Amino acid sequence: MNDIPSKVKNFLNFVDGLPVKDKWVDEVRELISRIKKIEEEKVNYMTFQMKIAEERAEAEARGEAKGIKAAIAMAKDFSIGQSQVIEQLMKRFDLTHDQALAAVQANW
Image (tube, rainbow, N blue to C red):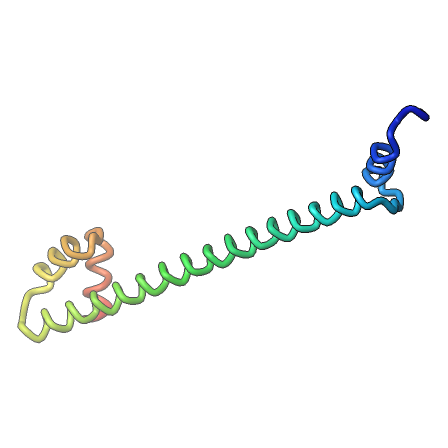
């Protein structure tokens, strides 16, 4: 084991978790620390992106609900029949018949 260079011995000791004072091992330790930090930042960024996507979807759903409610109110004001409103909601908001019917019943 005496023919193993000291840098290699020091590195192996570092890998085993032993305290090592070596400039090269310090550089490796610093590099590992930076890589871990980058990975943490990636996870934080991905979490942030997921949160933004969730909030965007919620905002879109709220906006669509407001649009449906407004369309029903306008149709009611113009004395358009419920069956025609249901048909248009299905067409314009890509709703099923049951979804459109429920929206009309809730907002008529």
